[in-house]
Image 1 (cartoon, helix red, strand yellow):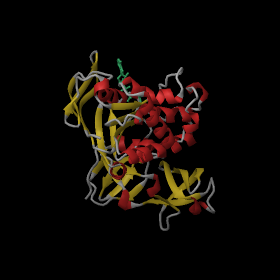
Image 2 (cartoon, protein in one colour; image 1 turned 180 degrees about the vertical axis):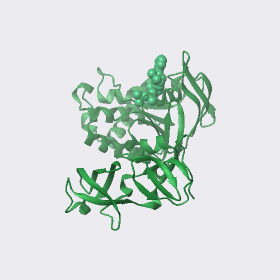
Image 3 (spheres, helix red, strand yellow; image 1 turned 90 degrees about the vertical axis):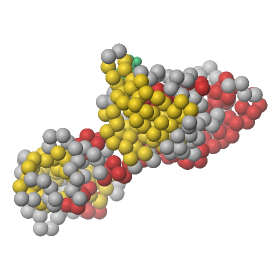
Image 4 (cartoon, rainbow, N blue to C red; image 1 turned 180 degrees about the horizontal axis):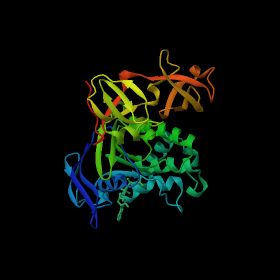
Length: 353
Ligand code: ATP
């Protein structure tokens, strides 16, 4: 186990700076999840930590060792890739023992360790098979087994679940969390899936165009996004973002939706409303919305609402949906204590307390 620190790390491909002055700490024993849209530099950052990509500038330390120019094999990190990268001609047992034998380990000891790991991962019955005879989920377990067998100081996961179907992704997500908690190994996990990031991370880092936009506990990023980019990126369904103006403490969106706002500056701003903070069937509200579409998600339902002042998304408890149908017109309002205000010009959060 070890903490990892990136200081002022820059990566240029030719003239293009794809990672810019990155300062990032991976805390000892935690899972840090790097999340952001495609092309924002997540994989490049992970590959620089692994030593598979040279840094253009800056330093990377693991524990108290500067590994910036060290070979990958001398960094004591293990990677799990999206495409598993198993050796097709080797059995599962041989795949898992491979990193131990490649480092000069003895076969009986390596096999003993591999069998222990296989037991933990529930793949003991597959040890004699070749990767071609395994399902995607089983292959991913073998890839994880190969990574954990040598008890590295740092795990690096590069979108390891992208090739799996939805149910298996959720199962494997839980399994990765369980393993990480069991081994307590420092881990960096890269994904473009914000839900995966929310559920897996101790610390969540949102990147955009080669820079960190915000980092912290997932609950902090959810409840206090620093700008409209993070606000829109985290949370599903997305936060409603309404552009409008505040006059005398009353916000009016461009399309005409109104709500009183406490402590809001007068003038233009963007109002953020999480779908769960839209109150449907609110008593005393003068604003009406037509329920356009209902999507039932078990205990909760997503409502697409059509207001004279534009569209809005709401999330409600499914029991509250009893008696509500598509096409019905209902009063709506918003929970004022949970609203988010952003500058109309910069998109930055406006503090209200
Ligand atoms: P994704 O979620 O799609 O994997 P990402 O956030 O992991 O995206 P990176 O793979 O790190 O993004 O790529 C960041 C940028 O660097 C992209 O614009 C990509 O095209 C560019 N890039 C990556 N590798 C190279 C390379 N070897 N040569 C030139 N440009 C590269």
